[in-house]
Image (cartoon, rainbow, N blue to C red; front, side):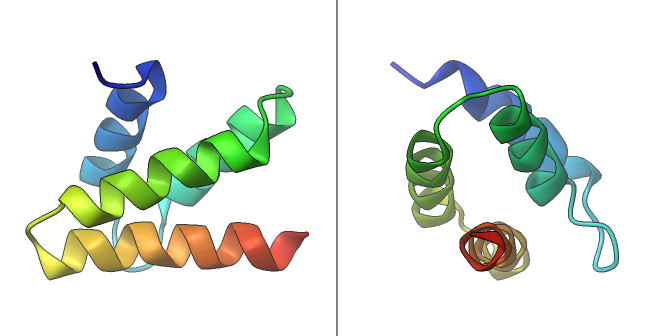
Length: 71
């Protein structure tokens, strides 16, 4: 069964561009609401591994990198 946030990240990925990483913004919002960063990163890692398109995987990887740099 997929995590409930997976759908949110899929939607954010579809709306993302080279200049606007909506996946990162969605992750920041969820963390800001109190969800554990480790949980969000785990979901993003699984999403990145499941993607076929390199462009999409790059967007998710950039979000992961940005989140880990914010610490």
